[in-house]
Figure 1: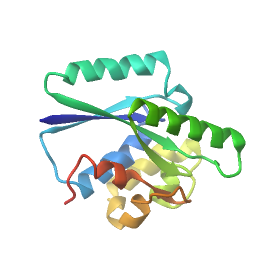
Figure 2: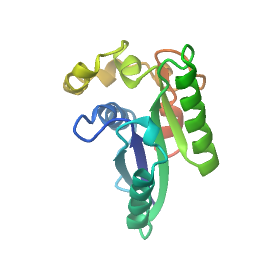
Figure 3: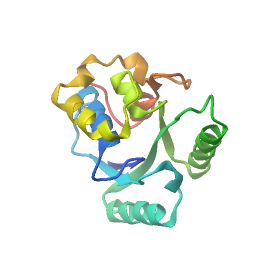
Figure 4: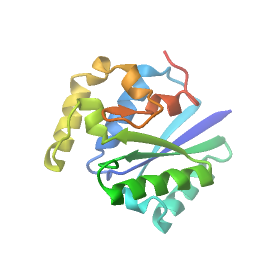
Length: 171
């Protein structure tokens, strides 16, 4: 049976930065399969994780795929300054709880996707350029799988491989 993985991303389709890092991880670390469809949903910001527009788009994409197989919804969220900022901690907690209640998976990046994959925070004005350079230079080859398979939220780490391992086969 085929599976569709819907990745709900904080970025927008024009920037597409988060998807670059996620797709590079999938392509480099996991076997290719014509039974797996990767579908991005661009939220623009994490605060829209349960907005009517986003939920409608997820529902539409699930219906389109229903005859072929099952769909898994995976939210991809930066933790931001969760340990210092109450607002960020509350937002992360709320999204985590929402995913648990709805049966969705949650991939987190501590503190953000750039810190995990590039080792540093990047100003918004340079994120597109840095993501493109990461892809061109095959930066994923330099990544430690330990940093990408963390179960506890810690700086410079993510649980991305913990979630992807549920649905994909490693190379």
